[in-house]
Length: 242
Ligand SMILES: O=C(O)c1cc(=O)[nH]c(=O)n1[C@@H]1O[C@H](COP(=O)(O)O)[C@@H](O)[C@H]1O
Image (cartoon, rainbow, N blue to C red; front, side):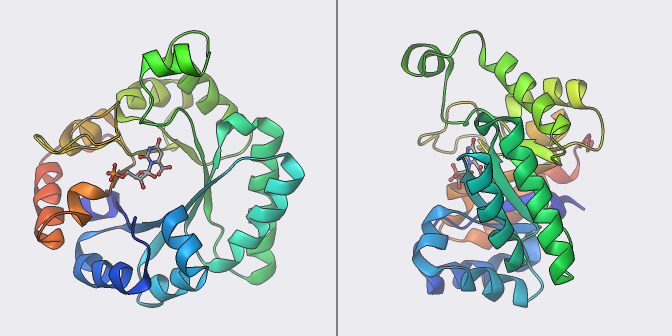
């Protein structure tokens, strides 16, 4: 089902606007992503509001701290009923394992389905020049994404967040079944904004994305449901390699 692949980023700062989007888009979307802006504005209650009507939530708070702190914070997040939770791969293997273990343990304690835990690799807003010159990182972005994806898999995580340009190399390194979630999706002609490593929805699905994350091209459209439907049409005829 194409709609199962679509994650819409609810990057807004109040409940009314978020729920308006949820109500308009629920029939066309697999997951809603609650990020820092909405979570900091409304707190965990917003996750319950969205899931109450049967929609699924990707809780995108990108945890990145020492293993003990991330493990304890992830344990709290596991209580809210999100289907996906993320951390930064840059926190290292022990940190990712701490998140994985505490999320699984807490979900079991509370009798909830265990959320997927995925690692953000190199942000889709980073290009090679920024990666090398500003961040001082050696080598190519692709090699870092591959190495972090392998580390995430070894640490027991369910998948990674990366740019659609790295889907094929992650799939090759990590095999089938490993989830590849790709933001940095821009339908032809859509504004890039701060995104740098992008592809169209159809290109990402063809390359093997498990899920595509789209925010502004849908939420900023005059008719968000029509924008989501147009994207579903673009991916519906495409061989799904995810
Ligand atoms: O973890 C993420 O979701 C994420 C990782 C990444 O590398 N790049 C990225 O854009 N995102 C998120 O994906 C969404 C993309 O939104 P748009 O650029 O508006 O389509 C935003 O909510 C970002 O926070």
